[in-house]
Each structure stands twice: as structure tokens, then as C-alpha cells.
Image 1 (tube, rainbow, N blue to C red):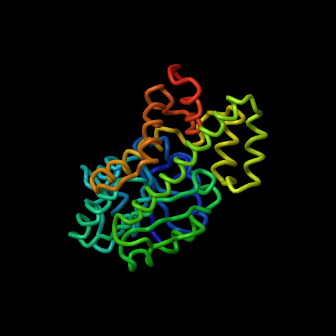
Image 2: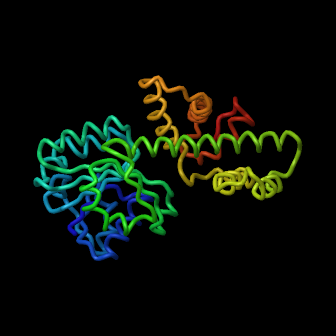
Image 3: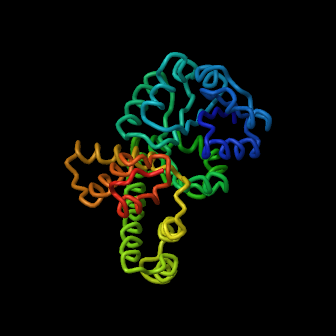
Length: 292
């Protein structure tokens, strides 16, 4: 297929590589042209604007940071909507607000362009190993058309529902995961207050009912005092802003998530936004000390 990709970060760059390796005709666009150097050397074509990218692509995949970024790519000057022919498809694999996904789907539909919101879980490792979990919102026929691309990128694909549904599922994923990170932080804080070896506590818990991937990875980071970002905390903070705003609008009570949201706010206020989310432990240890 003729595929375009926007977003050549720690997730998007390995995903682009998988698409090339599978034989797809790949084009890319980036705000910083130097970001395209590696993937162009591997065989991709660089485009000057998102509109140019859309004009040569059957499907454009975007994986960027925020709702405003996706809306600007799609509808801004030189945006994707200016280049898409009827029948084109925009697959957004970013984590954005469900309302933004629904609005973009409706706008594209006016010109006969398809939409899928298809956020992913699995992080940098999942992108590198093509083992991502993909949560898709949009029309089933659109998903069927892009399924060969998803098969290059992920291990599981679930059609959750209509446009926006993939983003709701991703919000649920982030809520469970970051709440669990906060629980690990509190457990490590309690163990530390008792003077215990945190690594031994993680090892003990891993063999019981508290064992989980979050405990293994994030509890392990806390035990090693490794706060260099795997995923920067500011991104989880952004994700929680999305889900807490939706909860407010819908009147959905999320009491545990609300507490975690406040801890993330504290972490941002202490300057820890570019550290790993395991730094939630440090908020509990030294709430008045600026992090670095």
C-alpha cells in the first residue's frame, strides 16, 4: 500500500521501519526535516507538507503528542485534508481526546475520507518488537482496509466501536496503568519507611497476587532509583488530563484516578515532567524538594 507516516519519535520510527520491511511504499513528513534522515536512508520518501503526504498516500498514520497536534495536522494550513482524495484514510495512533477523534471523523466524512482512532499500548518496546496492542475506533470497513498495516505493527487489534471508542479504551488503559504505578510508589514508600530492601520487596510481591507487569517494570525502577525516562511523566500527565476532563463532563466518578491525578500534578510542579513516571515515588519521599 501507499502509506504516509507522521511522528518519527521513539514509537513512530520503529513502526515506520516495520512498514518498509513489509514492502509498503512509505512516505513521511516531520516538522523538523532532520528527523526524517534515518528513515529516508532506509527507503522512505520525505514530503514537504502533510497535504503532499496525503496526496500520495492511500493511508496516513499519525502518532504525535496531543489533540491540538492532530487537529493541526489534519485541518491546519497545508494539512492532510487538503491532500486526501475521496477514499483516503487517516489513522491516528496518538493518545488524544475522544471528542477530538469524533470531530475529525465527522469533518473527514464530509469529503469521503475515512478515519480511525487507533491508539496503542506497549510503549517503545512494543513498537520496536511489533507487539503493540491496538484499540480501534471507527467504521469496521475502514479497519478492514488498514488491517494489513496493523498486522505489521501489533500483536492484537480490537475494534472497540465507533469513532472515539479507541481513545476511550486507551484512557481506561492509562488509568489502570498509572494508578498501579502510584500503588507501587506507595508500597515502596511504606517498605522504605520500615527500612526494608525495596528490591527484595518487589521480588516477594512478584510471586504473589500483587504480581504484575507494572510492579516488575516500575517497581523495579523505583527499587533501583532509576528515574531516567522510559516514558516521560508529562505524557501520562497529559493522558490523565484527557480522562479527568471527560469524567467531569460525563459526571463519572473516578475517585482513585482523581488522587493519582493530584500526585501527577505534584510531580509536574516539582519539575519532574521529563523524568520517568516512577518518580511518583519521589513525590511521596520529598514533597517539598524540587526534582532533577
